[in-house]
Amino acid sequence: MTPAPLLAIDGLSMRFGAQPLFDGLDFSSGPGAVALVGPNGTGKSTLLTLLAGIATPQAGSIRIAGHALAGAQHQAKARLAYVPDESVAYEFMTGAEFLGMVDALRGTRDAPRAAPLLAGLGLAAHVDKRFGAMSLGTRKKFMLAAGLMGDAAVVLMDEPTNGIDAAAKAWLADLIRQQAASRLLLFSTHDQGLIDATDARLLRLG
Image (cartoon, rainbow, N blue to C red):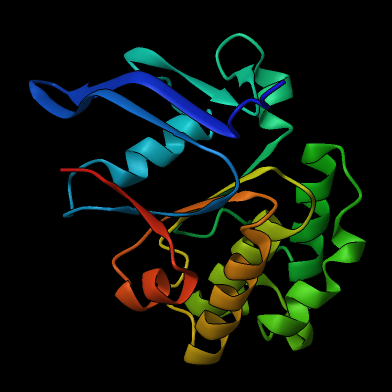
C-alpha cells in the first residue's frame, strides 16, 4: 500500500478583499526539501500559516501525513512543526524556558534532546539568557531549534535564514539536506544560497 504524502494541498484558495493570493493551489510531497518562492506579497507567509493550521483557507483542503487539517486537527498538528519569521517568545523567558514551553504545548519531551541543535546553531551560551536581552538573530535561532527538535514529519519555516550568521546558515543547510530523507522541510525564502545548498524543489507563488 502506497503511504500517504506527508503534505497534500488540494484546491487551496485565499484572497484578501478583491485580491487573490492563490486560487486552486494543488501540491503534494513526501520527504524532501521544498523552497516556497515568489515576489513579496504573493502569499508565502499566509500559505505557511494555513498549512500550520493557524489560519483557515477560504476553499480547499490540507492533509498532513494523511490527516485532514480541518477534520482531524489534533492528529495533523501532532505531525507538524512551524517556525515563524519573528519570535513568539515572551520577553521575560529564557531560551531554556521557551523550549520547555514548546514541549509542554506539544505534550512532548523533546527539549532535553535539543542539545545538538543548540550547539549547531551557536546557542549553548544563550540558553539562560532572557529573550528581551537577545539579538534578533539569536531569537530566530531559538525559533528554529524549537521547530526542528522532535520528530515532526512536516517542518514549516518562514524565511529561516533571516538574521542569522553565515556559520548558522551553513549548519542549517547541512541539517536540512540530511533530514530531507525522512521528513518534509518546507521553507519560504529569498535566499538562493539556501536553495542551492539544500537542493530544494521549488513551490512558486505569483
